[in-house]
Every structure is written in C-alpha cells, then in structure tokens.
Image (cartoon, rainbow, N blue to C red):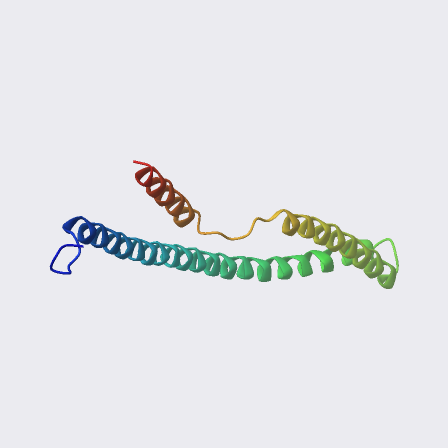
Length: 136
C-alpha cells in the first residue's frame, strides 16, 4: 500500500484482470449453455419428426400385416379347417413378434445416452485453452 492508503497500481491491475477473467468465464459458460440448449432443441425436433414418421409407418405396417394374415389364413384354409389355419398364422405372427422384441431390447441396451456432442467438445476445448493460458 502507498502512503495515501491506496493499493499499489500492480494490485489494482491484478484485481482488474481477475475480475475481467471471472466475467469472461461467466459469459463463456452462459454461451456454452445456450449452444447446448440450441443443439438439444434441434435434436429433439428431429427425434419428434422421426418418431411421428415411424409411427405412421408402423400403422401402415400393421394394416399390411393384417391383410397378409388374412391372406395366409385363406390360403391355409384350402388344406386345413379355417380354425386350424387361423391358429397356425397366429402362432407364426407371435413368433415373429417375440424375435423382434428380443432384437429391440438388445438395441436399447446398446444405445448411448443422448449428449450434446458439439457443446461438450466446445467446453473441452475451452477448458484446454484456459489451462494452457493459465500455465503461461
């Protein structure tokens, strides 16, 4: 401290630098959060649209499968009683459903969590840059 009771100019500059660094870091964190939010919003919209399209495709697939099942029953009814033909087709459809459910379960087990990759990579780069500058 000087004779007037004020801090030396060097202390004021250090305090000013620390204050500015804190402000810049705060701004950087807010910008990274906005980036992550924007990325997740985009991904959410795509997931929503994709889910809707898959839902519509699934509806038409069910209708197609119903038509195919009726056709299979009618074809088997030429050689078997109608009830036996319906039972055979129903058992076949149940087997296909079980195989598809097992495959779907395996895929869910392999799924990685949804993460805003670009934002995470950007934050990692920012941290690396801050560490590098701190060592200078």
